[in-house]
Amino acid sequence: MPWIIVWQVLVFSIGALLALSAVLAAIRSFVLPRNESVLLNNAVFKALRFFFDGIARLGSTYARRDRVMALYAPVALVALPIVWLVFIALGYTAMYWALDEGSWSRCYRISNNSLLTIGADEPTRRLFASSLSYSEATLGLLLLTLLISYLPTIYQAFSRRELVVARLELRAGTPATPTSLIQWLNRSGSLSDDGPQWQRWEEWFVEIEESHTSLPVLSFFRSPQAGRSWVSAAGIILESAALISSTVDQPRDQQMELCFKAGCIAINRVARFFQNNAHATPTPLAPDADPATDPTHQEFLNAYANLQEQDLTLLRDPEKAWRHYQELHSRYAEALRYLGVLLMTPENAASEAF
Image (cartoon, rainbow, N blue to C red; front, side):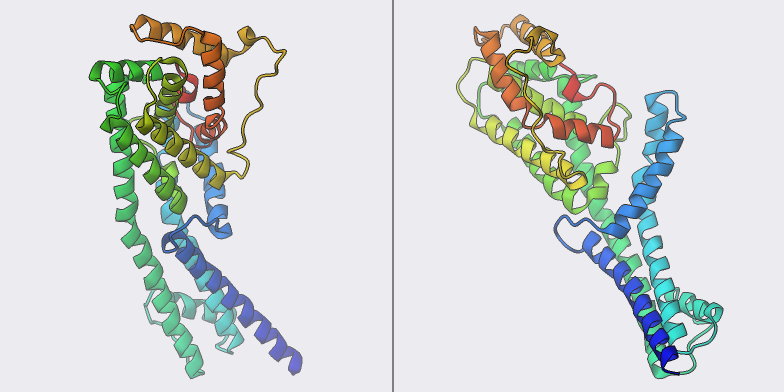
């Protein structure tokens, strides 16, 4: 019957599409060296995030919620190849059925045996079906190999990221604040010269931009200590650079400006990957608004007074410094705030702590 042939061709095409979508998802996730948004992977992450968010809400403290969310990224990473293998198994099941290899249950057994290279039940009718069986076994091994080979890459990038976060805590204290970091920079002599510290942070931001967009799951790997976060660390560095540039009366520090620019680009591009409008500039304070009622303005004045107590030479006009700071702050504030909510950073987030 012609309609049976048409139906078999349609089922075979659907099966091939399912298998191809899983293979392309793996390639775009681990092999393609650029940031790609994969629908299949996004569905897996969103489903698991909904599950983990529900469990985390049961925690009465941030430490308990952090312990729950610490499992989110590793579980999601392991779940990806499982979902890919399921799609391949279902796709090849449909293709075997379209090639008259028997009932759906037998085709499913053939697919699983081929995928897991058990070989207990093999295609029997045609050479083409046997070739499909070998190709399915190859794809199964390939996907597992991809995950195993990229796990060291992910954890190496994670270790380099967390090394800077831990060092920043040593310099800025616990909880870390921009003013405490500026105080350390002033004592160490790194405040008024193009010191290597800003260069190291610039390199850290460049690596964050590359690694956290090409491997977005890395953004969700949490720091070993509950009170640490790479987003909070990035905010501390950016806030410190913004405060120094707007308030401290000293010659321009080109290395600090490069670090600030690299940080703004990195934070906005990582945020943009997860939400297209995350990098939008926030609405500035209206001309007729009262700065005294703006909490950010009051925090800035508190930071200005704190820096004065550290015997730093500051600009004489705090309001002029505030306007400069506000312009710098607007370059990263929205992206930093969005990432803080998305990644559940500690309550003492750098974007809110002076």
